[in-house]
Amino acid sequence: MRTTPRFPVTALAVAATAVAGTVTFAADATPARAATCAGYVGLTFDDGPSNAHTPALLGALRQYGLRATMFNEGQYAAAYPAQVRAEVGAGMWVGNHSYTHPHLTQLSQAQADSEISRTQQAIAAAGGGTPQLFRPPYGETNATVQAVEAKYHLTQIIWDVDSQDWNGASVDAIVQANARLTNGQIILMHEWPANTLAAIPRIAQTLAAKGLCAGRISPQTGRAVAP
Image (cartoon, rainbow, N blue to C red):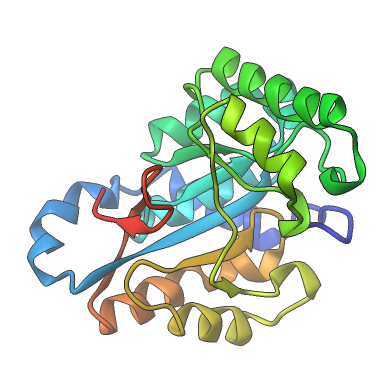
């Protein structure tokens, strides 16, 4: 879901990038914490990748031991292939979010096919593997879109909780949205809002306090499961 342009790089993002260069991959500690996981949730970030925002977000996620699914737009995967590789290298999963972020339900089946197939190709060419998950822009779907998803063996992933970060939600509101997650649920976030980046440390604390761990999204069930 994107209704406003990407935010410019902020001092916070620059600082987070600098921190990211000095930290150890916190996900290395995940196995030791596995016994304390009462459940798993799916953290998702739409609209990447970019040179402006992806490095800082990945740095923050790694620092706090979180893994997430990055729903990439094909046009940006093609433009910033190194960032797709960085997502995979940081332990994230890469999903398809269409090529140009259109309203797919307003397109013909051939146009929807082009949006989805070109993104599959762009992500694979960038080193992100062949996506198994697809998030329709704006969460808009219909039988035509679902037929194209099936053609490419993609599981449609919407969300259980909308962080509203795309709508100017505060850091507190984004953290509170994550606090509503329960086992197996998925939250919608985006890579470009500065408040989302700032919320990462508290998101990690909030999930840990509830005994929840950041997991992967199963292509079989569409729910968050153990990595």
